[in-house]
Length: 416
Ligand SMILES: O=c1ccn([C@@H]2O[C@H](COP(=O)(O)OP(=O)(O)O[C@H]3O[C@H](CO)[C@@H](O)[C@H](O)[C@H]3O)[C@@H](O)[C@H]2O)c(=O)[nH]1
Ligand SMILES: [Mn+2]
Image 1: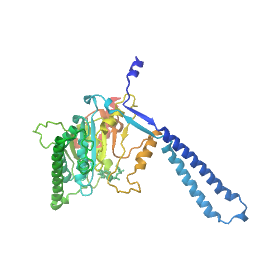
Image 2: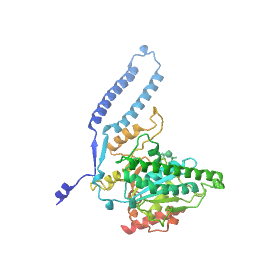
Image 3: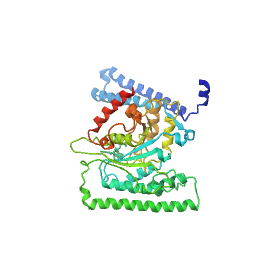
Image 4: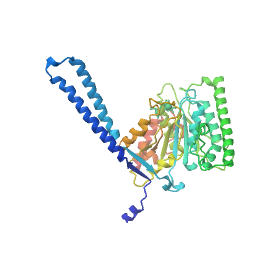
């Protein structure tokens, strides 16, 4: 019996060990190591020569020797990155049918509409709504730490635009789900389509995007010219709003849920920056959607591959993946840094070399954004109990964390 079920197993992902890189890296490490041994021999031999032959003072020689030893030690530690680099391949086409896929919550944090331009933040929100996933299983939460009316109004505008943008992306299978990048890119991403129908639809979308940008700019401008600008970003009550501008209209295309959350902030309490905001989103989303997986995004990190949801699920849905897997990290790619990126501002070195190396030696890293985390890894078995404590309002009040933790242990005790 077991044999036949093993035979039927089709992997959803595979891990390749890069043999050529291993040979090159290890040969290079070996040669480098020999060179270091020669250097140490050279430095040490200085101390054994007759004092008469010595023309160089001992102290500088010793200092240089110590620094070289330290550098060699640092080099030795970094060899683990190059020891066994791996790459991974996923097979999203083998995933179960849409109705069997697990739900996903997307958390987007923003902190200040003056420092983080609203047009960019809304582009991130729109790109998350256009992720290639069943809309009823996708829930996007925007955390606004400033509690600003600007962000709330812009989120509503973004939702209105997404009602047209999401179907457009789906219909034409677009890879670039971020409107700003899509319309400013020199290469036209027409997905699977060409021809006049697509061109007409694209022109219409471009006009709608221009209108969206104008509206957002107007909101920002109105805000800076009225008394609203005096709004205290460090002292405000909580707001949660499910964005649905036209609840009476039955949309022909189903949309992911979009929720605006602004936690309560008071000067007398530490707000703990992004971590505090994520904690609140975790609690609020437990009440609303309680999806088993969460994608975390910074407000300036748009989704540049809408299929990332399905790619991440290839790890979680594979029956042979260990249940202890807690997160799937995607690399960050940066655009518009500068033409000659001589200081590697794009940090390709980290994303394309180091991360593959970490992964190969069993130590993948989390970068703080762009990862799909399992709710259970953060909340334990409590994550399976939806909305069992308090109300949404209490979940975002200061001090509710203690209450939440008390409840968490209460539920864990009852389950065991
Ligand atoms: O009180 C705060 C402060 C920041 N943020 C948000 O947190 C995110 C990251 O903050 P940012 O100042 O942009 O940090 P960076 O240094 O640009 O980001 C790097 O460092 C962060 C902190 O370690 C990580 O979270 C990020 O993933 C990583 O890209 C942004 O979306 C902010 O809006 C909040 O929600 N509340
Ligand atoms: Mn940032």
